[in-house]
Image (cartoon, rainbow, N blue to C red):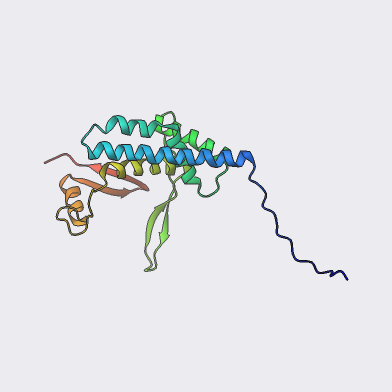
Length: 182
């Protein structure tokens, strides 16, 4: 007698197509180059070597720009969208196009007031990712900041005041205002 209820068959996993594997490898390579070049900046800064040439290479590298575009797009980015964004990032960094306008709008606070917020266009966000990494690589402390005299947030704020750098929000535009020394 044959049982009409047979054991469920396992769904066989389908292999990832070659183009998807190649795309994943390309993304991985871009992220590895990004991390390696950021590490090179950090190494140059720690050893007291000239950082400028290493930093210039980092900012101009197409794979660094591609990695930043991928990070901007988030998980599972579309290849064509990532390539287009990477081209736009390259044009922004090289100065071939000017930075897009950043829209500002008020966001209501729970206490009834409001604060200005902005939404960065994707290309500008990718440039910010590159710049953030470059700055962190140069200025990352070699030891923990907590409990070390001279490395606290109050000290950082004091140094900003001493150097007379102030952030000012006016007329929907965020500007860094440098005052001439007294």
